[in-house]
Length: 504
Ligand code: SAH
Image (cartoon, helix red, strand yellow):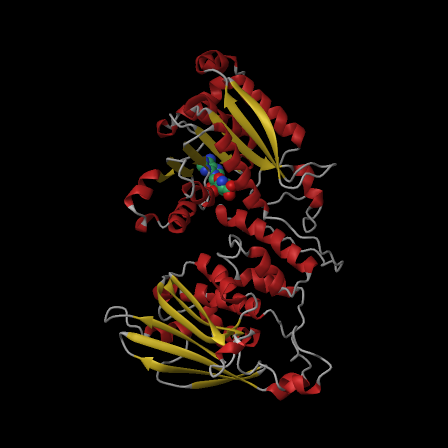
């Protein structure tokens, strides 16, 4: 079984730098012994213009059987022959993924002391896997790789026997990926997705597999539309582990959005088998609820305040009724990631006219934010210190004054339902507070009252009869424009906050 990794280059950026990135010299063929056989790394071509590294794994089927781990999910344990006659030596299965991580460990981590700038930057890549076992077929292969930044994802079914086309296709595909990606990103994707497609993990899934998955999935898994399938297959459908991984991914997603470390949430793994299907990740449910509310409000020019990495902006762009979309965030890093996600630099002119990202702080009034139909504050207010909240309130409801304002925030009562959250903890290290439904309603009603808005509440996520939904959303609708002056004067502590808010 093997795969090849190719890149192209020129005098300035020679393709042979691939050797540095992989920590394997292009002039040598090297051999490594891994737990399941022998891995060879060799370069069929290595020039300034084009360089290809091949990883070839010779699996020792007898050793596999001796280790008692060669059967996989689909094997038949009662047939002695099947233990020896199986596809493991030929198919790019999880064994290849394991070899990949062993042989290219530093490359997977993106470490390259000789060429750090090359490791950090995307490079033109072509990856080919001639025999990839794919449960779910070519269609699933595309679904898994297409959202990950590849410009070409080609998965062609391999016929069972070329001489007898009527026998149909085998369960293998020939995979070609092309695109500009960082090498470490590409390798980490393969490390996870090869075994996911093979769907026959050859070793016992231990609790630290969740950590491995999250490490390899950093930067792409938290937002992958097939996150659930990937997580569940990678963890051999062990539901308790899958659920743990998905909950941690939700926290990772939040942490990535504002540049902070995830809180360590590491509970003992409970082994209760729980087979109920988990619906969409909460983040996706939140976006759906926001899109619905914006649609109901008839908004077309929308502010996403505290837009983070731009997931909502991206979703808004997909709907033509949103003619102008502005993402605002205080974090430059978040905005850089958002702009990369949206491919702002490669966007057609008409699309580009619809979207803008800008840096700004929401605790200061900002003239650029006036005149919009709606503003969204999705999971933002809890990132502010409570004493700063009135300043945000004034900047949004007093100064920018869109007709509709949507505010979502965690419902702290629901935290007891997050299995991996230790008692008394907030969901994310940077949350300055989390509110009960009563606290949120109290705040929102006062804000509405002070600024001339009506407010309604929407539950987001599965509503628990006792503790309510995981996320709560307030939908503010302006009552009448001319009420503004009067309402603002009524605001008890407006003086101080207004000054602060106007200081910018
Ligand atoms: N709205 C996104 C991101 C939520 S994370 C989502 O729903 O996924 C909170 C975001 O608010 C972070 O990106 C953080 O940088 C931003 N933020 C926090 N305080 C801010 C402030 N004062 N002004 C602007 N953005 C702020």
